[in-house]
Image (cartoon, rainbow, N blue to C red):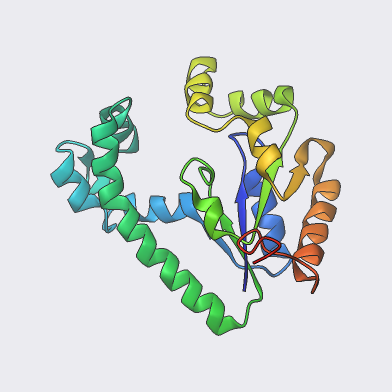
Length: 207
């Protein structure tokens, strides 16, 4: 199976692009949704996160804002957080792979916002970066409820710059031109990775 890493900074249209891959019949693993499922009432991360960070749960679920404030700017706290969450995500991802293999899928997409930041691109056959002009990105993000310019700046400071992501991508999908051009780009990516001549980034020329 071909593994495609799908990433992009906040407001670039990554979630919409991920849905386009689903519409094309490709299974998509949504890392954000997987984390959210761990944090809801009854989620597997609730009890261990309360043990690691007392007071970050409310009504049996993780209070994501309280957790964010507890780990913000604290490398040791982030290490503790990752020690709880990453193994749980690993099991969830393994189950996704098992189901995808059973379905006979030939291509999988892994929607991971912090793909480059976590080194996840090393496990992918191809990386797709979703981008848009900075003014479009800013307008999209500031239209979200509760978003402020200061919070946007803080989020962007934790993410690899868009230009760097594009430079490291195998494919770039630009969403500022509208839905249909983006959909055509998704089809182009799928045709390219299914081509017998496709060379995985995990197996560079000479391997």
